[in-house]
Amino acid sequence: MGTRMERAATMTHADTGASVRETQRYRPAAVGTPAARVLVVEDEPGIAGFVRRGLLFEGFAVDVAADGRTALAAIRDAPPDVLVLDIMLPGVDGFEVTRRVRAAEAAERRSALPILMLTARDAVPDRVTGLELGADDYLVKPFAFDELLARVRALLRRSQTPGNGGAPADVLRFGDLTLDLGSRTVGRGDREISLTTREFDLLALFLRHPNQVLPRPLLMERIWGDDFFGDSNVLEVFVANLRRSLEAGGEPRLIQTVRGVGYVLRAVS
Ligand code: CA
Image (cartoon, rainbow, N blue to C red):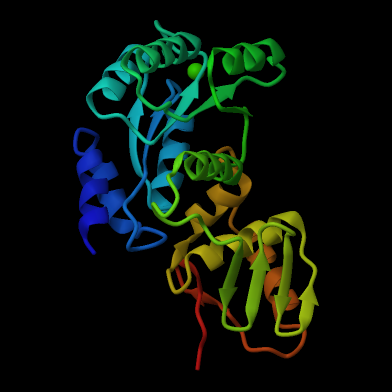
């Protein structure tokens, strides 16, 4: 039961003390399956930290490399399950990393490491080049964390051998509440609930972490992204609207306030 945690903590051992604390504070989203390992190659500390915190919170083991040479060494020493790779890197860039990874795999007849490339906005030639070199998917900056998460999970699903661990459920449930990630519909009992995109994303986040207190800064970062500097009144308004929709049929409250900290999805008897 503790193996996942220990592993996550070990993976960030070489990192700062702060990151180890963070790993220990955030519980994995699911227990019982081994943590998939993601290597994030990104030289911008803000983006690297944003991606790393989000993935740790979702229960992944995460390493970060700030340049291509370090990334290639890390891949050689301890191959990750997925590579999140920025193109513009100091020294060896993302294209060259991809080229070398694929060349080594071909030479050693190893299976291909799934690669998600991060590209600058409007850099269409970059995307084409990346895919031609063997990247599996790309994501255009700036991106919402949930987009990255969905793509990382999709790459893992594709690379997983059947029976080797859980693909995430497409329908999330809590009590009489259901949220379908595929059709993006929400219901409570027989009642259909219509939500805005952000309300839906916020509710999905709660449903992925039931009974876990989600701190305000985490919610704001996850829903509005890395560069959201508004005050948390905005979050309160969103939660209030979401509650109104969820309780419109007179149902009991599911999203509880934890004073001074944040919110938790929890049934109150
Ligand atoms: Ca960069």
